[in-house]
Length: 163
Image (cartoon, rainbow, N blue to C red; front, side, top):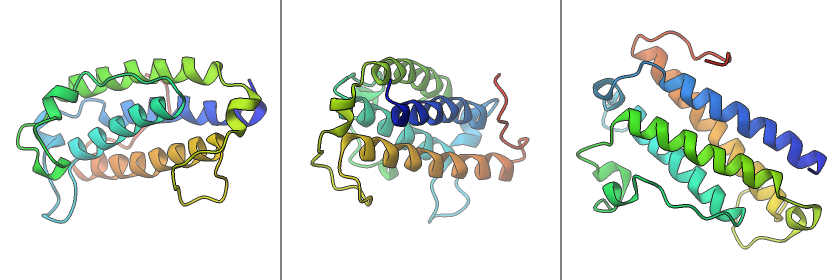
């Protein structure tokens, strides 16, 4: 594995764990509470991150379908969701797609990561490597939101430890 991918792989592994740690013990009713009408709830943030993981799989050439795809297909946007998937389903889907991603990372060559991409991410590096770096930073940003919401709703601080 190329050194630059190896470093991003470490962030992927860390984000995988932090997402699960943020949602540890969070029940469905709390996950669906919003601070106000202008903010997302934990369920929306978690579903957005899950969707982004499936997008990253596609980006790496390892397309895999979300087990929640049919359940969420009837909604045009996350804000329209009236009935959220159970957090247990979200956590399970996260774990499965994360395994697929980790396997996909291991198969990337120097040639693969140097290929230009057509996505327009707000980053100067328009290669697969740059796209992956941006998408992992995007995850980190939203994991921070989950950590904040977790604390706001009275749960302990997000942990960096392995559960």
